[in-house]
Image (cartoon, rainbow, N blue to C red; front, side):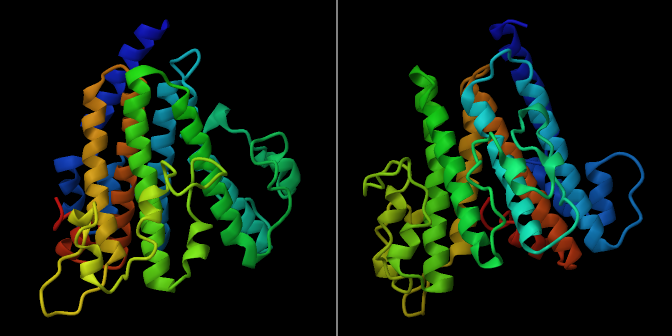
Length: 339
């Protein structure tokens, strides 16, 4: 299939799958279910497994994630030479697999943990389990060649996150013209929000010093300049007082702040800010999908939309497991008060 024919086919296929997805207004169907068994029946055909709720919740999440990745791989396989950015997106799950492998080995587990299958695009040799050096050999993460101590896992995971983002950003820069500009906007917004949320969580929940926070942020390159395209927005809020609304009221993203009332004690709420940003990023991705049909942008935005759907399904599954009513379920998923 030539490039133009492949692009047309992929866009039509992706659009058809989005029409059936639980995103936008269609996401409300997720909140109509009353149990995990109902959720399973909504999402999948066939008989619902007979399993305890904890296991059924995990099964739902796992099956949804596997289905999404299988759909995405099937889409990009239509291209003889998929754009680097389309392959780089898959590293999110490749590195997630490695986090699971590292944690399992660190904890002395005998069996290989559940691995998300990205098929022929995987560069890790899971058959070499439990030899971590052989698992990562000749891959972009060959540096991960020793079993980390439990106390080191967070640092290893952070290093994988940063590597993923830098590889993705470099791949975006290989695009040309308007497509590079538009995909850059989408990816930059996503990474900038990730960095902002890291700052807020580490300041509010852990009271972490600024220099330690900076070490956990994702920069476009090793220079870590203050005006870094991916980290600047996060660096700009490092010294803001999380308990002072006056410090935040003129913030460029003040529209995402949790409500403030004069005369009451206020503290920035990372969970509220995250939900608010998520709604905006979701709308941005949907707009991008339709903005430039049959382009790399449309496929990148499809990937982001489906990731958002996965997040929503996870939230619903977890809420049902905890026996939350529909109103609390929507609130926990960031759906009711912000959409």
